[in-house]
Image (cartoon, rainbow, N blue to C red; front, side, top):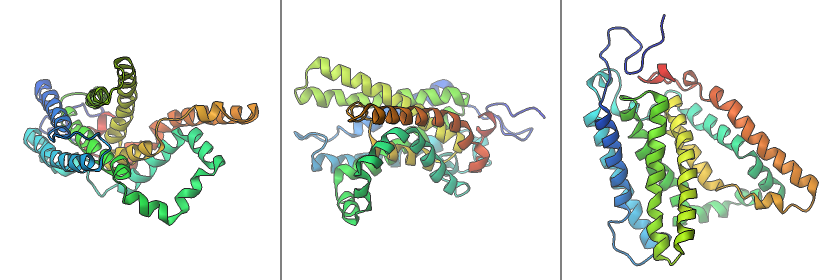
Length: 299
């Protein structure tokens, strides 16, 4: 039996699923513009980390999370809704949910094996065993933004709402490259804030280009997790974990007191990266996540 073709259900004689590129890409572009614009509807003299700014942006992105699914519900091919609800194609399913939480977290932790090993050896991990750490964390708006609201709203908007539309137009490997570009471009709005704060233009451009690069790379990984698992939870937990870890601080490695320790941590960084590459296709096997969505046969 031949594998199912993209744009069709696995069963024969089912209605073809198709959206024009203009519709799917155009809708995704509009959604991304709405998301970024929502952050600037409030006039304020404060920076992005001020409590009033954070609270207003929380409200804005939650409004966007109400608007974005409308595009999916209205534009999705009728053939899709013959078998799935709008929430199912957006990754909200009970089947395979536990796996979608655990395995992407294990996979992402493997990638961060080097930074995690540094944290374990310097004793920083002990703060996580303190109940007051968590009490203070959930009361901290910046912590909530970085660990909950940003991953929740960004993954919901750029993965759960965009990918189901793009997958009705493009093969998965193409769709997984479009949303990361929009995701990376959406982060360029920080240029305005950095210039307003008086940061030199050259520094702003350098930092913004680097941010565009790594957010785009992460976006590819996040889109891969969503497409392979068919679950919103998979990219969400990966995003939250990455935000918690931050970009790896290589200075922690180079500043080690002995060459032996330095070599050990470099080896763990490399081992984590290689292990992540090796485990990536296996730990995202669609069948493990009960992923029978319309694109699953082509991943």
